[in-house]
Length: 402
Image (cartoon, rainbow, N blue to C red; front, side, top):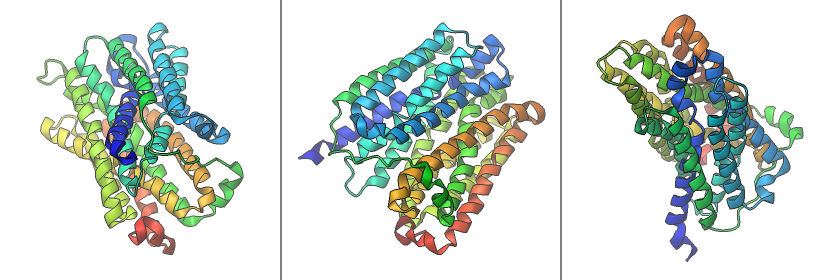
């Protein structure tokens, strides 16, 4: 009987994740308007995105170290995180946008994201019956669509960036209440703890280390692409025959980032069939080529620009869940929690660097130089996963499919 309610429960968790994760890029989605209205510089603009990532790293480490996911009932933990994050996001409207406090509020939002995304995974896992890969793919898809959603809000209310912030917060408030009524499929399993003493042992595991290298290359590209593609498109469409380039840029950004949800699902299904290194290497090859090409297409035909960016949006996220799967399959069972926490923390810290470098390089060398810099990540990730593929231990990946 429990399984009879599975589609509804999993669907509700996924929708709630999507609605709450809209907070992640709520301020980033309105950067073109903020830069125009407040004359924000490159550093402040970057901090609107990077502070959330830093907060997520801090929240993940705190939650894992103190075992909060096991001490607090998951629905209540998730709800509290969503409500606090929504409030912090809403408070942006009460402080100077070009000041320090607004960045602190974005940091708090990021800390709370650590109580939403991983805890959502924990809840959906209670319904897993041999379909964990698909369920994880759903949640990564929700992360992707949630990241894209603020750009759709920006299309709906193009004249006032403040309404985008308000709508994103209302979305998270609704999700925070709704999650309390979701039924779980069983008792949640214990969340793996983070043990700093294991870091050295984990890093000496060569196959595991290469799986992490692959993830680091992936993260160098992913969030910088998501964070800056909207501003790039706004510049590319300005001066052309568009009545409102801001609306078109926001709509295209929503489509480009959002379509990655399907890439994530497809990547998960393919990885179980043809192998994890195969999928990650293919995805990084395609996304790396797109990164090299996209920045040079600012003055090109709009249809060509859109096609390349959509392919980039699909490929840049298609491999994301597979790096965590590699860690789970390659690490010793008692090391999985620490290995995953370490992988995620370092990966998000690396993303901070690329997010801040993009506007600096774009100012000096144009968007081609900025996006070409991002291509370094998938290139190095491709090499790392290729080396992992040739190691004997790779037979443990995806049931022997490497």
